[in-house]
Amino acid sequence: MERINKTLQRLSGNENFQKRFEEQRQEVLQNPGVRAFLMEHQDEVTHDMINKGMIKLFEFTKQSIGCNKCPSLDGCVNMMKGYHPELVINRGSIDVVYKRCQRKVIADEKRKNEQLIKSLYVPRDILEASFEDFEGDSGRLDAVDKAATFLMNYEKGKKQKGLYFYGKFGVGKSYLLGAIANELAKKQISSMIVYVPELLREMKGSIADSTLNEKIEALKKEPILMMDDIGAEAVSSWTRDEVLGPILQFRMLESLPTFFTSNFDFAGLEHHLTYSQRGEEEKMKARRIMERIRSLSEPVLVDGPNRR
Image (cartoon, rainbow, N blue to C red):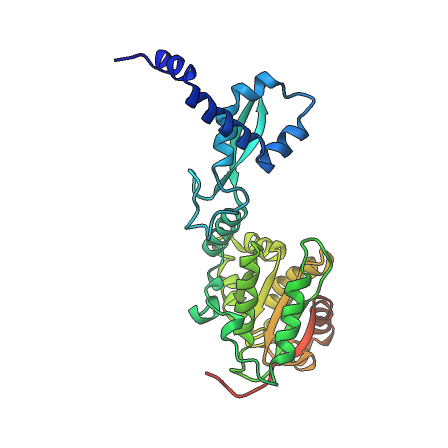
């Protein structure tokens, strides 16, 4: 059997092989990502480094960068699913390292949050919601328009209000949250929907297993938080002041977009938050919560017939 180095020497002398190799070499060097890398490192990259690193450069060009060749995370075409290549200089040589793509980052973060916060689980029809299936009659056109405006204008780090969808039971408020979340996911933007009554019950149970602070921190820092059905819960001073209060205060100070759905308008929700299960009237504490909600969101009426 012929040794590999002899085979390569023999092929390198072949005119057709040399021509194909040079064409492929030029194709690699014309790749936008390769060109950008070589330009960025022009003061340290030599011709010898390029020649020796041609296999690495070729490996880089044949994979999806920034998910540009992948229809979804499950449909990732790269050697390592969910990871895309990045060119680096490593000990004087050109090398390729693999980092999580944005879709993988969002999926991992969602999985971590789902394991942490059980009230993330919402009905399947909400998780699969889309604007294409949303019936935009006159009572809901303003809500759809405001949602579309948010999606068009959203930029990470930019101060931007969320929306407070309020209206009667069954008019599609929660469905709107799902549709917004799915549009954000298409743009590789993380969001979290929590069902507030279940969330607050869960928070009470988290005192025993010492996960309360961890859960509150996750809710505080989620890039876009959606609080479904606020006002449907039985109010206690503790959940209002020690759970909702810190979460909303942090998000207000950090200008993190926050969405809400409720059967109450602002005045109705303030009245609901004023009276605890014990019948105590605490107007100032309820007012503080409402100041944060007003700062975080714009009220939008969602009207129409009950579609459930």
